[in-house]
Image (cartoon, rainbow, N blue to C red; front, side, top):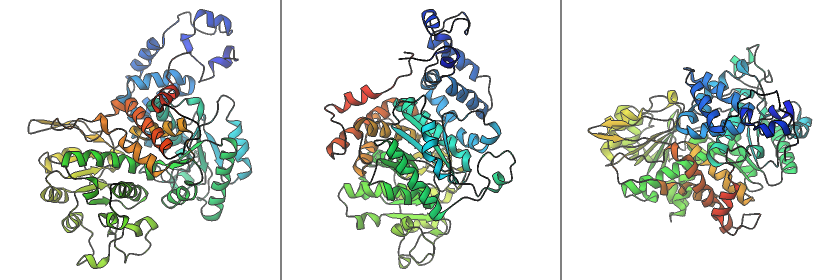
Length: 543
C-alpha cells in the first residue's frame, strides 16, 4: 500500500516510477502537474537511460550517472542494469567502483541509503541504524565494511561505503534480493591513508585508524544491536583489514548468520573453478597441488575453502594441507619465518623440505610442481613468462588463475597465459577478459567474479532464514553453478559468463536452501526449495 503523495512519492526511490505513473495514478497520488504529459513504459524509460549512458566516455562518470538513477528510481535502475548486465556490472561494481571509492569525498552527493557509524560515538549505533529504516521493510541483509582493505587499493576509510552500496546493488540485480530488505553500513574507524588525512575535502574521521580493544568492542556492540533489531539478519562483512577480517569471522560465524566475502566468497568461487578444472583435466580436486601466490586474507581464504573441499572428498586434513604452497612477499612461506598470521602458519612448509629459501616464482613452481597456480597478491605481472612456461612444462593442462583485480593489479594477462602455454592453460581472471584467438581456436576466459556466487548464497540464506552459514552451505553454493558449463567445446570458459548471473544466482540459492534444510539450519519450514527461492525473487517491475 502506498501512503505517500506528490513530491514525497516522487522522491522515494523505492516507489517512484517517474514518467511511468499512469494518468489514474497521477490523479490518485496528487501528481497532476508534477510530471510531463507523456506516460512511458519502463522499457521506454530504459531505452532513454541506455542511450544517455553512451554519452559518457569516462567510466566513473557513467557510474555516477547510473548511481544517480539508483538514488531516484531503484526499480528502473535494476531494470536497466539487468538488461545490460555484462556491460554495466563492471561499471557499477568492479573494477570501476575502485575509482568511485578513491574519489568518494570529491563526488559525494547523497548517502544512498547508507548508515555511517563513527567509532568515536558507539552510543549512536542503535539510533543511527533506526534512523535509516523509514522507507525500508524488514532488514534481512546488511553489508558492512570499515574501508581498511578495499579491493586491491588499501585503506580508504569512510569512502569504502561505496563498496557496501555497490555490493547490495549487485545482490538485487543478480539474485533478486528486495532492495527494501537491505542496509549498507560503514564503520568509520579513521584511516591510516595520509592522502585522506591531509585532504581538506575528506568527509570521514580525520584521525589514525582505531585498532585493538576499542575496535573490537565497537564491533561487538554493533553485532549485538544488529541482532537485537534484526534477529534473523545475514551480516555480510566486506573489505575489512587483513587481521580483523578473519578474527571477526571466526568469533561470530558459529553464533549468528554471517560470512565474509573476501575470505569465503572468493574461496567458494575458486572451488567452483576447481570443480570445472577437475572435470577438464580428469584429475579429482583431492589430487590437485595448489600454489597460491599471495598469502593475505584472500589467499588464505581461497586455500581454506579448497582445503575443505579436499577433506569432504575423502582426504584427511593433514594430507590435504600437504598439497598447498603459499607465497608471500618474502617468498614461499616456511615455518621458520617470523610474523606469520595464523592462516599462514597453517600452510607453512617445513624449511627442511627445500635446499634454500625460495623467492623466485619460476623456482618455486619447479620445486613444488603444482597443478594449479592462483594469484591473490595484487602484484601486477607477477606471473612472468618463465614461471608460466614451467607450469606448462609440468602439466598437460595447467590451471593458472590470476584473480587479483582490478586489471592493473592482475598477476598476468590472459593473452600472455594462452600464448606462453600454446593454448593449454585453463585460465580464470579476476576482471573481465576479452575472448582470445590462438591457432584457430577462440578461448573464452572465465572470470572469478564473486557476483556469480554471493548474491545466490545470500538469497538462499535469506529464504531459509538460516541460523548460521555452514561449510556445507558454502560448498553447496560452489557446486550450484557447475551445471551451467559445457566443456566439450575447445576454448570453453572454466566459469560461467556474467550473462548467466541471474540463472547462476537462482541455482546457487536453491542449492544453499537444500543444504540448510539438510543440516537443520533453516528457521522456517520449507517443503519445496525451488519454489521458496522463486517466490522470494524480487523483479524490477512497476507495481
